[in-house]
Amino acid sequence: MARATCSHLHLVPTLLHPLKSNFLRNQTLLRTAHFYGTQRRFSSFSSRISMSLRAGIVGLPNVGKSTLFNAVVENGKAQAANFPFCTIEPNVGIVAVPDSRLQVLSNLSKSVRAVPASIEFVDIAGLVKGASQGEGLGNKFLSHIREVDSILQVVRCFEDNDIVHVNGKVDPKSDIDVINLELVFADLDQIDKRLEKLKKGKAKDSQSKVKEEAEKSALEKIREALLDGKPARSVTLTDYERDAVKHLCLLTMKPVIYVANVAESDLSDAADNNYVKEVTKVASELQSGIVTVSAQVEAELTELPMEERQEYLNSLGVSGSGLGNLIRATYGLLGLRTYFTSGEKETKAWTILAGMTAPQAAGVIHSDFEKGFIRAETVAYDDFVAAGSLAAAREKGLLRSEGKDYIVQEGDVMLFRFNV
Ligand SMILES: Nc1ncnc2c1ncn2[C@@H]1O[C@H](COP(=O)(O)OP(=O)(O)OP(=O)(O)O)[C@@H](O)[C@H]1O
Ligand SMILES: [Mg+2]
Image (cartoon, rainbow, N blue to C red; front, side):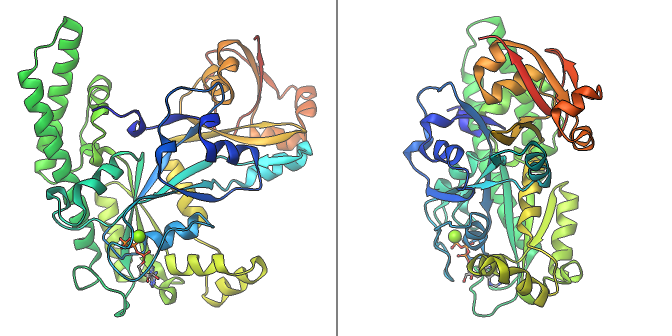
């Protein structure tokens, strides 16, 4: 059945989401975690909505997924331990997207608080060969992957004889193949079932018939690619076809970043590491991103007091934590953009999709802003900083008055005029 939650981006009604509304109200709570539960299901929309996207942490068992999750979601409580299938139920956590522009704007506007954009991370159980046939905890885990917007595939690139590798040895290429193949099989299975149904079903009217035809042709193209071992996202589809297959939430349609999880000792020269080189090669062949981190180091960092963290990083020969890169890469992967509102009360980063118009962007703050939209006063981030304030930008003629067709640009600082 079609699930709204697998759509590329979904609107989350914050007031009905206990954690998220709390997150928005309590700005000191930037990183938090909770268990995947019934609160994810919403029956109706509240007037206050916020955009959220979910990135699923996927990989073989015991490769460091929960360790990474706990480091990203700083007070995450996912159990991470040296045995396969340690995680069974997915853990969900909300993470602030680091953005240096936020503090700059906040300082200039003398805001009481600065509120970053956020991302949800989901720590999913390990997949093994045969998962699509029910091996391991198989299909259940695959269904958890179906509900995320993008995939972070953790690949073990660290040697450690004490940490069990389910296939007996560290082999990034083979590990990636195992996971990708399971996702391919799961999609093939789903596509075959759907095509069977479409063959039997008689469309009621000509419009649904056209749609079903588009779906059929898209699924046949995707099926071909999958049989070749290629992901659904590599298939060229028309917008109409893409839309027609959206409801299936195909696993290989989701964008992927490979996360090369290296040993502490390899962090400073990770690019020279042969395992990392292998991951980089596969990632570029599959037109996916790669981020190198040491989940172990990141987890250890979170245990240290702030003032000792940099010292520890220096001792490893690296300048900073890799998590910021990971979070930003995930955000970018989804084609997301940020615009800001900035005033004395608060400076806030808002998440929109690339190509959204000013009223749609306003609707992310409040649906009334979209309905009653009149104009948006807009200034580019650099111009705002150069002028020093919204008022100064206005005096210098840098503040533009934009109408309903304006496409909001990355880093725009906006003030909406609307009727209620
Ligand atoms: N970069 C690393 N270097 C060394 N050890 C690591 C590294 N990353 C993770 N580990 C260790 O690997 C073990 C497995 O980690 P973790 O529980 O996070 O794996 P997982 O992928 O979540 O496993 P599961 O699929 O069973 O839930 C832990 O003992 C952890 O400390
Ligand atoms: Mg785990």
